[in-house]
Length: 449
Image (cartoon, rainbow, N blue to C red; front, side):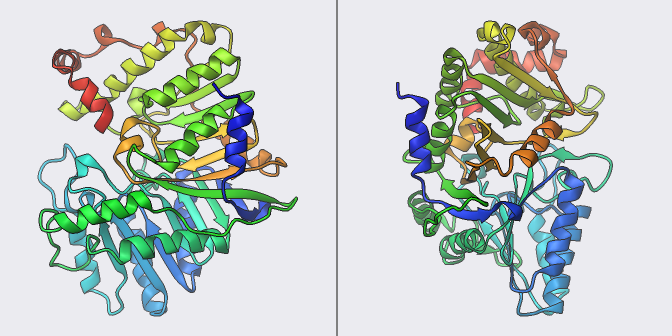
């Protein structure tokens, strides 16, 4: 097994973009994130590129889309492109019955305006279950606003509930250019990628050949930029993209980052379902004596949690399945919990949900990503991330404040018995999980959800 120094050298050899430390800003809440999106839309003069899993047909989604159209009407030369997942945009919400897709709103709003914005559906795979557009990043001129959040009421705290994520603003012409060029070269030029603001959208079946070729191109492509020297007032940023399990450069970078830990690692993930390799890497750190903090959402803070007073559906079993993973991990590593090396922190805040992703290593490295650090992200979805190397600790105050903000609504698991198990669950959940385990369906579910 290689030493941490070996993996630090691998990370240090990655191409990098120099970013002035005073051009890097952490935002701390969903409301701040929404306000910043609207402000950047209003101030953009050349281009606005938004890449997200979805922009929802709800109050917040319509507010964002209306702001984009208003900006386009004021300045018809403004290049505005929105990229969302092809499949997700054309269906309703899971568990909400028969609904129209978000594409209907896109088409209706396009018909109301003289100057159009371009809304693209990106089919990473032929079926949503097999892979989606999970790429992140909003570009406004030379500003990159990066978050794992999509665009809807709960992500933007439009009403009384919010979904907690991470939010970062980086002003860098080079980074913005690299991210814009990637989607222009791969998405806009692909026959598989379709305009969703137009009514004649081909089906995924009709696009079978183009989607296959598109998937191959995605697997072979990476952000393009020239590596830059980093001065004493700058940090290094490396954007990385990945799709599929084989030769996935993003997965490799994440594993190298974990294995580069010398003293302490801080990991955020919404669902405790790490790929086997990553789980082994984390347990190796514990054996080496490193301090490991993992902040994960309580099952009640999961996107799919259904309160007991509401009608239960199958999808509501997922948070309990993830919780069984967490309990097993805690039980296996109880001695590290006892000696303070392992801190498993459960996030819970009223009826709000938790969607944070990312890694901090040794006060020197930070990963911004939408990657859920689970088998689906590892093998099926198109993911990206920004690796920040802060060798001189210029961002330490901001990152310390961000971690404190993340930990605000958490409690530490001091013993695995604090985590509920099958016998503690409601009867409907017990029956569902029993059926799932009898046919070993949990092994498949862990890979695809």
